[in-house]
Length: 317
Image (cartoon, rainbow, N blue to C red):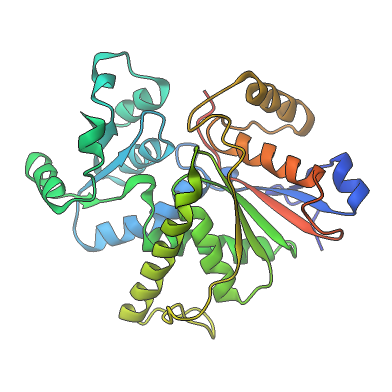
């Protein structure tokens, strides 16, 4: 049963939900953490920060675009937990322009910004490129774009048990940028042996490649578990051969691409805030909620379903 007065889980009354006997709920993961570290960003960083501390690292180095919530979260984490931070930003032309609100926030939190060409940015996983960055900035704990790695999945997976403490559900929906949050939900559902489906709404154009990335992340998580002996309950992620729970990835709600803000999306954000009393960001959660509402109206969910949409926070400019 839903605990109605639990502030992190609220109902989203929607005419289509009422007609189809569907419970549509909003999980306010953005309220669980300090404002600079909302929702899935804090979850992805949790075990990475612990690992960085264990390794004796004092600097975090990571990657992102001009409007990357991840860059802002890493900068905030550095300020809050005593790490120096460096952000490698896609697009050397940005160095010649005034900083946008996201990068201004990063700089205000002490992050050093390194602008690189889009061609060089594509080299961000190459050992030689990473070694060159280490020579320039000194030893650093490397975080991938979006903070998405096996340790990040471990943090996101905890969301499944947290939501289950307050309601049963058939679907758990998130925005998908790098696929890490969606993969983390798949991992959490597998470990809990819970018969629900993770649902992702891609926020970038041509997001079909995320399926391969999600498969690679889950394989990495299984490999880490096998090497470390990590185990959750009676199940383990060490067996890569078994099938992961089915998940959904919807590709038609990107509104023209990452960071695009057409009038239709801005109107939806304003209407949502007025109707439900929660602000959405223009990059992730607005597209997620738009997609969830559209799927609901199209009859995508079976009658009697409980769909929990996760508000992961974001930067609201």
